[in-house]
Length: 613
Image (cartoon, rainbow, N blue to C red; front, side, top):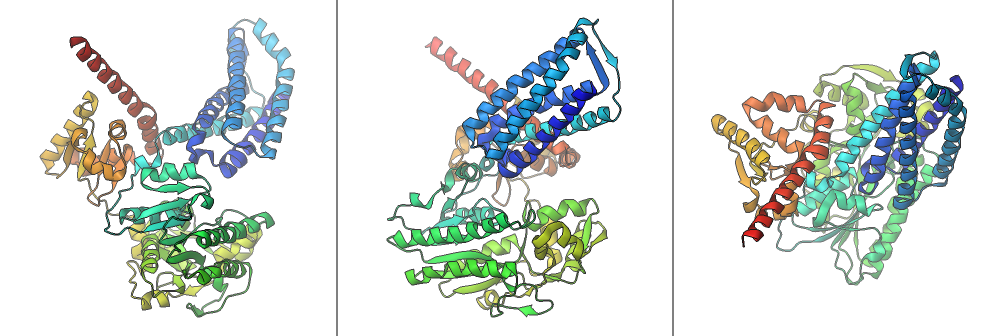
């Protein structure tokens, strides 16, 4: 049995690499709606594996229990074969993943060949589970069982989340403008791009998003945004007023290997060249091209104050940013106004720099990097979106602008301010030499000192909403709730009707100004979000006083937070782990079952009405 467990451990390590490298890092399956069926198969297989791993680690299965174990193994084989078919149908597997699948299949065959005589002996013994132990191998299998169980639950959560398009969870609202612009945005699904697209659509503009993954972009933005996967699909007669170029392989996320450095350049310069080719063939040229650059242009400059007239620094990042900026200069010959925004660290909820820092600081892992005296130039996400729109509409602005807040902060001051807002200590210090050893060239992002000032932005009349660090961090980490103005519910559903009645009575008792509206009267208003009556019937929606619409558990939590008798429930529902469980229950069980039940009820009512006629 020790040999069986060793082969099992090898299979676990191969599977862990496959999941982490191919499924997570390369394919990004938990973020792709087209991968939902594949993820469901992965969930089933991982839950079966967790049962088998833990079971064989500590028990000897005999008699009828052996038959049950063999049945589980047979089901796992069927699920794996189904998964192989689904993978070939929905995505192109890289060569390494195909080779790995072959190795895992051979290893699994060897496992069954070695295990078969033991299973035959167990099958002939009297039925029972005999407690046993194989020393360290039992503990290793227990560790793998726990890991595969957690990964399976995580995949199950992704299956539930991907069952509802992201735009229906947080719909965009189309604003109205007498003369809307058409804006082409590259990198629209990124952290900055998503915020910009929402702002442009909300302001009444028409937006075209260029994306390497059109399906993901449509899932994020819904019917109010046009998504294309290739610039060749844009007709030469199309009128595009402005182009915002935000696309580029993220610099953070691992060592800067030669292959990654090539992707950094090609993802930026290659897209720029394709945009120039598009503008060349358009009969009516765009008025402006706004390109995202970076303060990395200035290199490591210590305490020197850097404005737009400062020259490029020395090193890889300055060379990369100079190359990317220079690649766009041919558009000037087409009569297109060109603006480069040298962007600092972007601060906002749900991504960017803080997306990586907040979890570490929350558990007391805030750290001073290097000597901590290096300057960090930052900008709040809302200010960056406003600055991009400011540059788009001002024909007198051309060339380079620093997209940073006026008050830079040292890395030590930044970390302490973040920890202070989160009420956590800063206990760690990571020497620069250690960071270079661990991260290689990527350590430049963390250790280079750039005290950048937005001289041209301020001179153009732009005013920052957040020019000091602590108010910016407080706004992000302690956002002011927008309250609940309107609740949209399906009152034809008896369960929904009864639940909303509880909240309506609670709101009346405490004087909360919440309007509870049936679906029949909401379509004219909710159509601005691209929602149909069928969309509304599947989920609970609430609209905040800021006009934003949210659905599902976000909607429930927003209601609970406004009503005295439910506020503790809203606090509990936000706890990590509990929140994911509630999302899973609502998206995978509650909403689908109620939808099918109501559809069956409506079908029965129509049948009775037809029979009565």
